[in-house]
Structure formats: C-alpha cells, structure tokens
Length: 225
Length: 129
Image 1 (cartoon, each protein chain N blue to C red):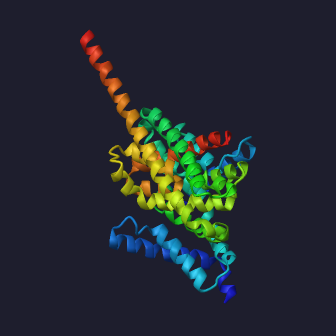
Image 2 (image 1 turned 120 degrees about the vertical axis):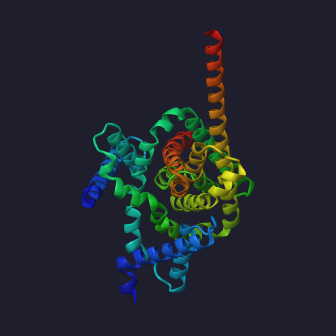
Image 3 (image 1 turned 90 degrees about the vertical axis):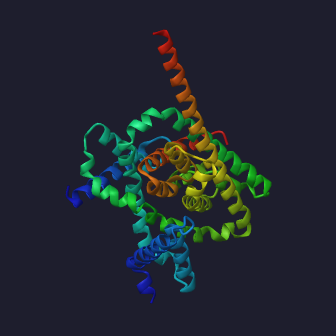
C-alpha cells in the first residue's frame, strides 16, 4: 500500500478531492465558516492520521501543488494593474494602513504571548504571523524564532482571516472596499487574499498590494527587535 | 493566447523573481518579486493582459487550493506547539482581529481626511473665484 501513497498522484488527488468537498459544503451552507481551504486541510489531516500515512508520502504530490503558489502570487499583479488608478489615488492611506496594521500585529502578538507566559523562542516565532510564508521564514530566523512554528502560525492566521474576513468587515463597519482589501492583506496575507478575491476585484487587488507592503514593513520592524 | 505560451511566460517571470531574490542583499520572497516584475511588464506594456488572462484567472479563482499543503504542514511542527496550543490560538485570534481593525480604520480615516482636505480646497477655490 505504501507504494500507492508514495505516488505523487496520492497527495494531489487527496487535496483536490477534499477541496472539492469543501467547495460543495460551502455552496450548500453559504456560511463563511464552511471555508473550502479549512475543510480540505481538516479532511486531509484526518485521512493522513486515520490511515497512518507518512507525511513525506503526502508531500510527494503536495509539494507539486505548493510550486504553484509562486505563480498564483505573481498573477496578483494583474489585479493590481487593473486597479492601478485606485492604488495611485489611495497610496497614502494604503501605506499608512499597512504600517499601522503591521505595528499592531507585531506588538499585540508580543504583549499577548508575554501575558500567557509563553517562552521566548515561541514568542519570537509568533511575531511574523501576519506576513506571507517566505517573509515569515526569513524574519523568524533572523530574530531567533523557529521557522516551522512561524509557518504554522502564519497558516493558522491566514485560514482564520479568510474564514472571518466577511464578519470582520461587518464588525468594524468597513464600507470602503479599498480599506477592506488592505485590512485583509495586512492581517492575513496571501491566504486571506484568496478570500478577498472572492469579495471583489478591488478587495483582491488591494489585499495583494498589502501582502508585499506589510511584509516589507515587518522586515523593517524586525530590525529593531 | 495559447495556454502553453501563458504558462511558459508565467513560470519565466517566477524564475526571474527567484533569481532577483538570490542576488538581493536582504531576504525578500521570490513570489512577491515576481508579482512586482509582472506588474512592471504590464505597466510598461512589454506584455498585454490578454497574454496571461486565462492562466491568471484560473490561478486567482483557485488560489486558496494551493495553500492546502502549507496548512497540512502544521502537523510537522505540532509537537513543538502542542503544550501551548490554546494560548497560541487565542493570540492568533485576538491579534488578527486587532490588526484587521487597526488597518481598516486607519485606511478609512486617512481617506476621510483626504476627502475633507480636497473639499476644503474646492470650497476655497470657489470662494476665491
């Protein structure tokens, strides 16, 4: 059986199957909590745990999917290009928003970790939770965190952001789609952006810009840590 | 535009982004650099939107799918975070809400200030006419 799991088709098929189940449940329930990504990740973990499949076997195919994250991030340029007039008009608010958001993210993570008496290494791995994975790996290494824990925090933040983005927009009475997009990208990076794209082209483009900006701002903040 | 051409173009841009990231003095993700490069190529009309439209639509519409392996990656560091999982989740929930709120309110606030400034300028110009 292990030869079957170790085939790249296993990881790819399991991911597509569980994602498709997630999309169907999402369409049926029309609930933000029934997020296809969240459902797919939970179902995959269940399958891997129940059938005792080695994680490496899943990643023979899984890594091939991850390869496409690069191009998927790059094509956000298309959304930004088509929304360039808005970016130009609102450049200052977008810049100030990502700076404020990144400062709040890093400082609130630090204070809360201290409040819960989490150890120093774990705390340092949490500070990069709102930036996209490659930024988080690089920064957490520099400031003495554990990159794999940092990635776990990034992914959980992203899924949480994409699940709750529509609720947060209502909670904070965000009427402007530019503000909504920048807030999604700054708080929950590329995973949140995948949700922002569904909300609208403006939201998607602004969220895409915010991924890069929040990453750069957080790199600069990390120099002072 | 032919699919193979679009895929080739996009992977070429990603390769270029990766190459630039290797030569930069600070660590900067190749994927974000590819985004900037692709934007510049579109902006200076080196390539047209139609050249990559279909491929881009496919990737953008299914973007969250590509994060599934990263999500499952939580399993590999689970032993490190198992003992403090509840506080960690609390930190993640609270900080995400705070970050979202702070960002959204700042953007909206600055836009409101800009609008007021623009209005004040307009009325000033009108009264001076």
